[in-house]
Image (cartoon, rainbow, N blue to C red; front, side, top):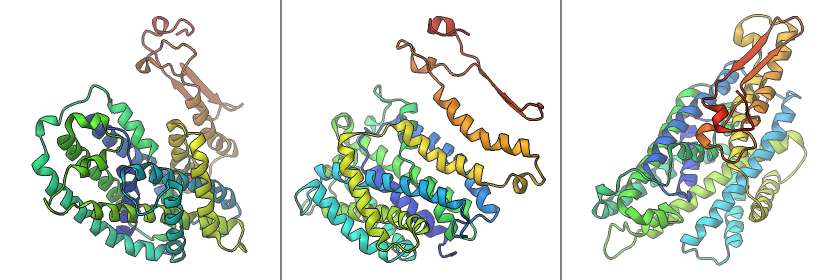
Length: 401
């Protein structure tokens, strides 16, 4: 099963994240770059439980019955994120000149390509990612060549319409590649931490490069751009007689196919673990993603729930799955194990307790639980959390310090 090299894993995840960056609709700002940098650091910390889990010898392919529930949850997550990828493709098609008419028809054609690429397996996808990475770097060099004459350094300034916290939330909500580590690490024997660092550093570098370039080229036009990347390439042509749009379009389609194929391959594997005799698992998963993308026109997923799902698969489930005896090096009493099992549920619930009913409370004054304590009957294990809220009585009349 150890069929992936660290460079291949980091390349696949980086290219998947690159597609999300190219499809971003929010304006690129300096605050967004700083927020993304903070988010990337937090994402690495959230991955630590996965590192510990696989250090114990964990494997999803060992046939353990307990992994069926995890496979079911991962299947649902991958189908939703695949559907979101199709939605991003359809949204970006407004800024592209595609050889077909109709957003959903273009998504269906991409799905047909993904059926073939998914049938080739993860190894073929890993090998092709190296080639696509080279093409992406070449396209970025062409973009830089065309953008430098149009760039105005005075446009690189702070924005009054964005904050670092908003940039942080945007990046955390789009970090749907992190749960894939729970599946991809099953294909590796070593250098898991190194490959994750390479992926996160590359993602931050790509976003910072495109954001700085876009701000310098577009200037005030950035605020009116529905898709900053495509607005940047439209005014950054390196040649006077030949436009580079075809190169960017090919790269964009390749990134889209790789990302959706990556989600499809692992969604099909999760489905195969649940239904071993099922045929055409990849086709069924792609059909589910298309159905979700069609339904997404009638509802939207809050960034809070997207972040919660990412944290669930990246930190909470690995922490619950990891054997405490192997991490701490000793036998733990049954009551402490029960407390450890309850902790992830409790912490998730504590996050939902934040806030109050007053509408006049500012974001910087948002209230949080003032005191939380959990103990067992014999008081052998406990957990406590104390927080102070400055000027709470002045901030909200319904709350008391």
